[in-house]
Length: 249
Image 1 (tube, rainbow, N blue to C red):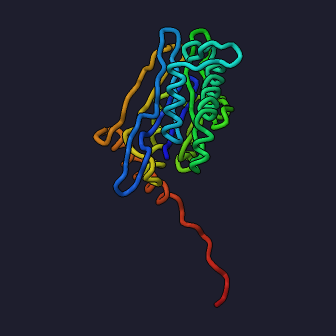
Image 2: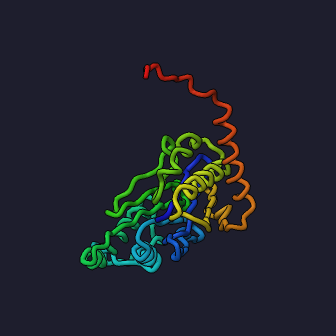
């Protein structure tokens, strides 16, 4: 299990991903799930959730290329002409991995599970954020719904629903995203540190911030403490419910 969130606000893009892939008493593993595809004319990033072997196979295909069945040409993200085209290529790569590995996985009672967040910008085109499903289809973030989540999303969603707007300042969006991650980590041990983050300002094509948060990170520790204290103070400041039972016993 994992948790990844992408936030597309007026100033730019924020992507946040944990790194935990297994959780148990004696089995905890971490792998990077936020993958960057950089070139002078583009900056693309993919956050992944699902079966690790499937996600690594898809990322490998997108990096090394795969044959387009219609043209015979090798397709890679470096050749995408727009972010919409890039999302189509990611969907094709997912379907190609399913074509190769899907039947074998099903024979061994293993589900083909993968979800991806694709965000970024190509020179001369719009900054965009997509979520790609296991079938290779996808949806896009909009100004009305400026965030997308994959993985264990239910614990962190209420924070985003209440606080994130398209006009939210980009580093406030990062802060809210980290609070969403903390809420998820507190409720599910399958999500955990380290956390990888990316901040990409609109029309820059170069990450303003690419950083890994570890257990020694003082800001994240302080954020977790402050958020817990703020919640306690908020609920204490709200009057107690006036309801009393009228049932005679």
